[in-house]
Amino acid sequence: MKRISSTAVIVMLACLAVFPNVGQPTKGENPLLSQIRTEFQRKNPRISEVSLIQIAPFRRPGPPEKYVLVAWGITSREADFSGDFWDEVFGFFVADGKLTIIEETLSIVPTPRWRDYSFTIDRLTSDTVSVRGAGDTYGDLPQLLRFQWDPFKARRGK
Image (cartoon, rainbow, N blue to C red; front, side, top):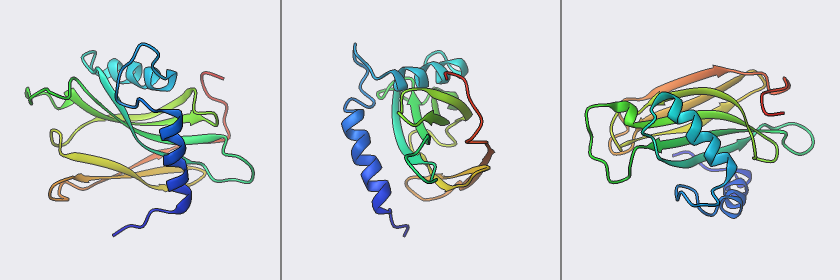
């Protein structure tokens, strides 16, 4: 069983303070969630509900200037499987140090299994982001996805 570091717990608690309505579309929705929804809707315009699953700071001296995000989107929490796995998606993003701008979309993928799958950040280095996925119920259908990135390069939105 993987242990969660104290830094990860602090970041998660900070996210609850910054994003109190994660997954709850509201009139004053957080701009970061709106940007993630827009990115998801490029793949499937029917995606309407969005949540952050994980936020990890890029470690370097001083305050984090970048965060890697794992997000989840679905057409509706009440939706039954319609035969299109793109109705539930996972996205991997890079956000600025203030968690206000999506600077890069690393990838967006459909769920391998409807409403029974998750991804977590496995490793974050100065050139690679690795995420692991597995079925929630049985731990099956494992995936390891790797994305190349350069956290020191200026990105869109800056």
